[in-house]
Amino acid sequence: MALLKTLDSQFFHTEIPYKPMGKYVHFLTIRVTESYPLFQTDSELNKARVRAGIQNREAISRLSMFKRKQSTPERLVGRELLRKYELMTAEECEYNVNFAMDNPDCIIYGFAIGDSGSEKSKVIVDTAFSITSFDESHETFTLNAPYENGTMASKGENGTKPGEVTSRINQQDHIRPQVFFPSIVTLKDPTEASFLYVFNNIMRTRHYGAQTTRTGRVRNELIGVVFADGEITSNLRWTQAIYDRLPEELLTSIDPLDEDLVKDKATEAIQALMAEEFIVHTDYIGENFNDLLAEVKSLTGTEEGITSILHQADQEAKTYEKAHIQKKKKGKAKTNA
Image (cartoon, rainbow, N blue to C red):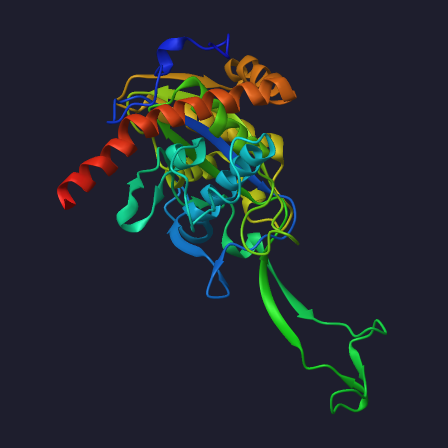
């Protein structure tokens, strides 16, 4: 059953193929921080020393958002919806513990269960980089823990003297609000349902990075999708192309970049980069993307619409699991016998 009217069915497979078939859809995403998230390893913010732009050859440090910092929160949002609409239970499929292997999350995003089996992810996400430099994109906060009287000084408990300032003080770098991370999320060999499943996960996810219950608020702005017969440019090159197009005085200012300007320059940059590609592609970017975005929003914004997507994706996943994963299990069992 066709769910979308704005896209040609030729972009999609009618069922999930077992082997790569050369169909790709790329979601062009601008991730915008809206609080003070932490993308870190070993208590330090992730960053990389790279060239500022394609034309601007100056070396700068940029904040990095590793691929798992992006893909894991998005697939967890999808899993939450599957449980809500009773297409999966926590007991039968527990993330990174016991995968059921027959639902949209497992088949689309992949899994690995030792000798029991594995499925390669059909979603490709690479490290994203901040447009602005590390110095303009982070702040250092001093953290401490107040006592019940609301002060940072003790009341003479636990061996401390009354009025003595607590020693529980720590410093932590946080990413500032309104820092922009251009990110291309790629889905290989999409069906219509898997396309909408991944699309919906991207748009619904609101928290990324460490301490997601307290901070880490991030909004995803999609500026387009590209259907192609191969992969397209990298996140880093797209970020560098955006950097080249922004006024220098804005890039070195402590003030946040204007979001509308970033999206305009991101659109210009990706269109220029796509013109350089040696692949067959159909682009829905800028104004061409508006009708598709509106249709997906209306579909995912109703219970009837979201359940139709989830049920179709679930049916495809179970068909795939029965045809290919169970077959692999039986083959291994015969070999062991």
